[in-house]
Length: 328
Image (cartoon, rainbow, N blue to C red; front, side):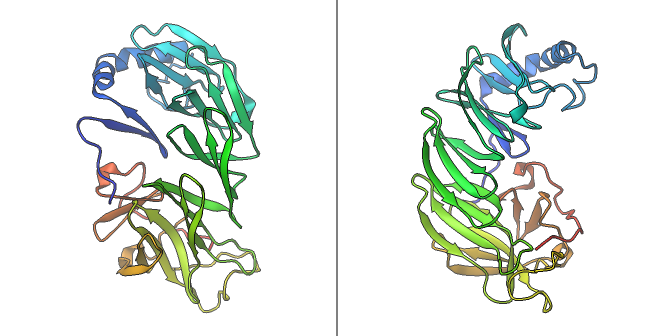
């Protein structure tokens, strides 16, 4: 099923790929209090233009729950405020391991703070640390049902319990994993081709609860996978023909290969090809290194997902693809 637009009953505020759900009562409060709250934040953070410019004084999403708002300041210290009055309820010192940005999630066990190199579960009342996990690189891709799925070190998919910190399952992939999308108890992985010899793109489908591999697919000779997108019922794979001088699989010279975007292959959940949709000529030179959305046959593709309308798509230039070439 194609991802639907958000309804009038609930709204999704998007920070990059991160989603925070606001219920109607909270939206009503936000409409009444957002302007004074942000004005207060601009003074509290010591940034006169923080009201106007995201990132000057705030370095995370605003996590709103139970009439409180939690956010990271520009130095990556955390602050918890009363949403009604702006009173400071708790603070947590900065952590260098966060990297450049923090994503905050409300989970059953507390508040999950995800940075570039660390996951921290915090007490939702005091912001004191309950547990942490560190790695050279941690990219959280999904938080649900008291579980977090992340890419650790760029090549390992890890599912963790947020209550116990226990690793529930792992899945190792042979190269850098560019997309992890979870829908309908399935996990879609897409590994882009590297410039190393004898490599090719790979699309993998896992069972979400156990991490069991259901199937994996590599492109047939002469074809290259440029990206993969998932809606829970079908997998759509952007593809193009390899140039004749590009070699069978990968390039050993480290040079970029220009692979034109020629088609979208539609697969069922068993990985069987059921349809091929030609790409519009104006998208032939789009860059798949970019997160800009694009449209093919009345579907919108972005961030590993398939969207029903342009309004539902998070950040991206609809119909204005980059003409930069990709490294494939």
